[in-house]
Amino acid sequence: MSAEVSALYQEMILDHYRRPRNKGTLENADASVEMKNPLCGDEIGLQVTFDGDAVRDLRFSGRGCSISLASASMMTQLVKGKGRDEIDAIRSQFRDLMLGVASGADESRLGALRALSGVARFPARVKCALLAWNALESALNGHTP
Amino acid sequence: MKLRTDFPLLANYPGLHYLDSAATSQKPQVVLDALRDFYETANANPHRGAYSLSVRATECYHQARVRIAQFLGVRDSDCLIFTRGTTEGLNLVAESWGFANVSSGDEIVVTALDHHANFVPWQVLAMRKGAKFRICELTPDGKIDLDFLSAMLNKRTKVVAFNHVSNAIGTINPVAEIGRLVREKTDAILVCDGAQSAPHFPVSFDSLGVDFYAFSGHKMLGPMGIGGLIGKREMLEEIPPYQTGGDMIEFVHDDRTTWNVLPHKFEAGTPNAANAVGLAAAVDYLDGIGMDRVIAHERSLMSIAQKQLAAIDGIQIYGPPAAERSGVISFTMSDVHPHDLATILDGEGVCIRAGHHCAQPLMRRLDVPATARASFYVYNDESDIDALVAGIIKAREIFAYVET
Image 1 (cartoon, rainbow over the protein chains, first blue to last red):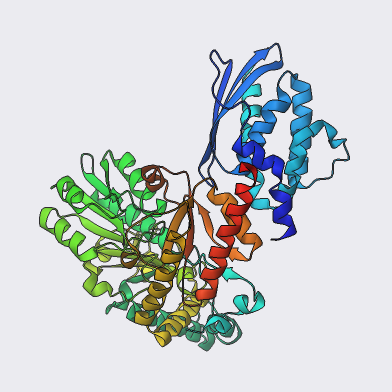
Image 2 (image 1 turned 30 degrees about the horizontal axis):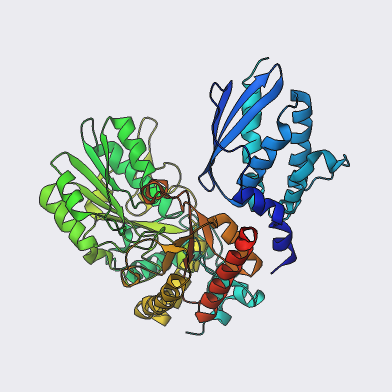
């Protein structure tokens, strides 16, 4: 197997794919977003409750590949409880990581998401990794604290 | 067949297993040579110059049309309009024929098996005209349900559009039977998407019994950006042009314009002469093999692939039995999403398509977001299937990892 493929399918990714965290729906969500990847037909639903400008809780639903579902699962763990500015910074840093742009910023705050760094070598899969994040951005943009 | 060495791209990548010919085919050396030869010895704007080089370009373009028409069984070669491909051919019919002939309350029929290119133009036409857009459903094994079709046809049906072969699951549709049903019950035109039939088995438009047939050159060993629409002369003469501009006019008056004769009426602007010449070289190459041998070769690979894939746990194959399909095998694998499978196979040098195959209405009916699709052509052999199967097993190993 090629080194790139082994680097892509790390145990952490497969674990989130098998046992997604925060999968489901929220009652009384403040924001509810549906997003599709028109290239492959994968879809994600994201529901968020807010506390001021911070994400109090969130759940995702939908079907997709291991990269899109693992990214969604990791995202929900990472952003829960965080404020808008911090989420925006993480999102932008994660996007840079996916696009292979060296940001120079400390990657430790990306936490488990660093396991997705191998995606940058597969341009056809970057959209999979960003689908949940685009849904989150849309949910945040629709929310005025 | 041992044709791999005829294809420079495959020779450049000895470890590559190209199983995505339903998306686009590789090109043999003779096609690349024909393109280069046109540009080196005949390039000028056809139909324009009085000088001999332009005359030569015009002749090359004309001969290409005659050759391709002969390949597709069209006696009247002026009824073969060059287009960018199948998509443009189908849009031409929907726009030119549809605009002139469909009105509010009429019905347009497509099938759940159609590619978006033979679905969306009709959907849009129906919306613009206030016509009813109707979808013929499929049998459980992915064929056009002829009883359903028969029941939905009536005197208001103006168009029945369908594909000769499904790009997504490989179903070969019974054109003659569909034609008989439609002629019996309606005055509708029959529009056939031939993108997946022209490359793979003998097609004779004159005996096919449809009114329009569209195809793509790049799926049949020819260059990208060239294809054609074949239509019956009386219809092509009757309907308005698709695009207007140079070459397609007869006289341009200050207040009105008259149209050139067929095929020029539908070919506005400088023609794609070099690619037409390249496509003519491709059909020469295919005829050199023999189209009966092409389909026989694909069928034999198909039956091997079907057997091997069906033996792998958790694989589901879509569409009719292998013997009733063209060289397309569409499948899913439990727990491994088609995109993940395609990425892992890519790591092994195996190119397959993963996605909805521009057939979202079909994917909804199969109740999957996507499938993995391997498709065969003249340059494939058993080693490609071996690599495919080995890659699938590898994918299963990777994804089984966390279960332990």
